[in-house]
Structures are given as C-alpha cells and as structure tokens.
Image (cartoon, rainbow, N blue to C red):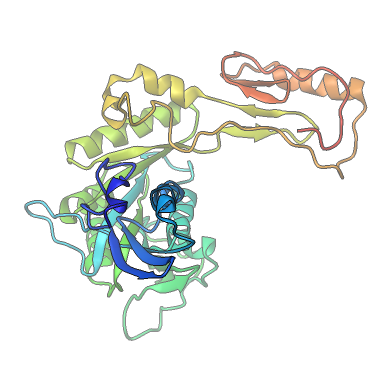
Length: 361
C-alpha cells in the first residue's frame, strides 16, 4: 500500500489510496490482486492508472499483477423543489432547440456507449410528439398498447428504453398541448419503475418550452449535451438552448457538431465544415462551457477526418473527376480537404492533385 500511495488519480491529482479507490488487495508470494474502484465505468484513464500502478509495484519484484476494475457512480444532489428519480444516480439530457440535427442519434449512441463501458443506463424518449427511439432500437411501435401494467422499460443493447411510442401504433400522431407534454415528461421520469441506473439519458424534443423546462425544474439534472450542425441557423437555435439551461442552472457539458462532413458520391475527398467552432468563438455567452485549461472552444466530438476510398470503387477518368470536383468546389465552405487531409484553415475546397489511387488514404 505504501508503493500505491505514490500513484495519483490523473484527474483529481490525489493518491488513489487516499481517495479510497484501492480495494481487496491480496498478496501471494510475488503475485498481487487488487480492485480499483473508479467514479464511472466509462473512465477513459484506466490505461494510465494501470500503467502507473505497474510502474509503482515493479521495483518491489512483483511478477504477476491482476487488476479488477469496479465503479461507484456518485449520485447528483437534488436542489430545492426537485424530486430525485427513484433508483437513478445521474440524469444527462441531450438537447438542441433545433429539429433534425440528430439529437436522437446522439442520445442513442451515448446510451449504448455507456452501457458497453459497463454502466447501467436508461434512456427516455421525451420527444412526445415525435418518438423515434423505438425505430432506432428496433422496437415494434405499440408493443405495450394492450398492456395492463402501463408503460414499462424495454431493454435493448444493454439500455433500458422508455418511449410513448410503445403505446402508439406506427404513424399515430400525438396532438397534445404544452401542459400535457410537460406532464408526460414528469410521468416518464417518476412513474416508470426504473431499475438501478448509473445514468439516465433523456432525448429532449426541439424547443425551449414545456418538455425541457419540466425536466430541468422537476428532477436533478447532472448536465446537458447540446447538439448542432455546422449551419449558422442551427447554431443560433443551439445558443438559445444553452442560454435556457444556464438560466435554469443546469450545467452544459459541451457541444457535439453533428453532420459536420460530406462524402461526395463521386471519388472525391471529404469536405468538412468548422462553422460551429468559428461561431462558438464569437459568442461570449458560450464562454461558460469552456475553460482555458480543461476544455476547448471547439465542439465535443469534432475530430480530424481523412478521406478513404474503397478499393472496389469504379475508377473515374481523371479529366471527368476533376471536372466534377470543380463543380462541387464552386460553392464556398468554411473548411476544406487538400492533399487528402482536412485543413480547416483553407476557406474553399480544393481537389487533390495527381491521379486517383485505389485505397489511397
């Protein structure tokens, strides 16, 4: 244990022993077994912690080291007037204020990724008038419409999913006024018997009205993820969502730029856009979601993209390909791919020079 005292948590910068993360240490000859209890199963620093532990124990002559990873997810504390959701430790909202930007896609992938990392995850389809999650998870619409037990969670891909779409045949519209939508969100939170969950992800509908306000005022929200596309109209709506959550005292974890690149149907490089980043830097009210040291002003999820061509794709003659890409590049973009590598500093898209090579990165 003395050797492990020198190992610090990379985020908290304190000894893992003092933090109570080291459990069940067993020493047999030159073999050591222990359990490291993390604050979340989805911790991205497991490899760093393991490397530091091995480095600390190696001078002691330990030949075999076995580490078991556990997690103790801490629950969010409700504020005055808020009611905790039974058996749920943390609630994460996915919002935008703009329709069609991919909130349901992001919420689905976030929930499934957390479940694959070992967390116990639930997902609420709070888009009452347009429930899409049953389709995304392959759940038959209306499967519970004749149930006498009411709405219940359905498990798919390790995620406990609830949607009003479970009660409606496919294609049935929900024509409700605002107060009814707010009441439905509260019922999804508190009336559904949830199992023990580390995270409950809520896929919010577009807008800054009843659904979002009911959720934020009624339950302890750990934080919200904002989703946008690169267009300025989408950014304008997303900024309103950020302002709303700030007024409701809900932390904004960050922003995901969705649909940020386009792959042309012809053999051409990927075209990307960094409009979101540029606009984010211009808006002073976004300063609260980034800090100089820990976060970037760029949206969460933005990554360098490299175009790839399939070796089975039919080759297009060079002259025709350049003619096609010239027509594509005539429309201005905020980022370009030049020399097969994304270059956000170039204002216009430029096709690469030289002949096409199948499989070229």
